[in-house]
Image (cartoon, rainbow, N blue to C red; front, side, top):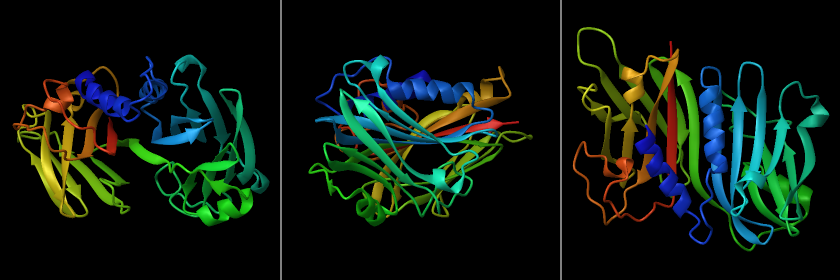
Length: 307
């Protein structure tokens, strides 16, 4: 699994080429926390590049839900001191109606950054992230640096600030999903605005060899037979005429018996020219001898298998 994470760290580290890569990273700490709580926790983290406090920084927006808590957290990276990043947490549990719309201030490099939100009508399904009727906005240097949600017009009306001259960029989306044999999610897979339905299904018991399927928008695009031998790999699939690289590492599904749950790792990225792959080698996942252009976006799915 560590080899696959090397690929992920390379993707995110290269997303901001002018900023040194701190170690350990803030999002790595968040991943570790999610790993510790994997039996009960589902989370969605969207990583943006945005202009905050006069610098182009990484902003991590995380929705997290357990049986006892539901929260939203924004972390703003300090590229020179990862132990001193800026954070703002909003607890969504037990809210009175008045608490679902508000403002909090956080400090980034000595500058005040405002976090505005309106979640009074937010609609949720099985994901900890709402799917409609909400906004969360960040204001820095009198500009709206980032808006999350589908109520952007309402956000600008309330805040009465102009957008930042530099548009934010969604670099990566990570999702932790718990399930037994079926994992369902929605995600963008390229520059298009459309989200795609992604289903991962596996069959691990019985007399036959274990198998795994990856389905996108109702079409089975990948079938992996002999999973005992092909627990790591990659394939190129076509989604809306766009080639997408799909990487997987499900070693722990098969061989990790240390706890009641284990996770598979799936990474979806637009296929980039300049790097060739042979089936089964997973050269990006292994971080071996592959000098590629970093894709503009990647979707990362941690599929936690629960008993």
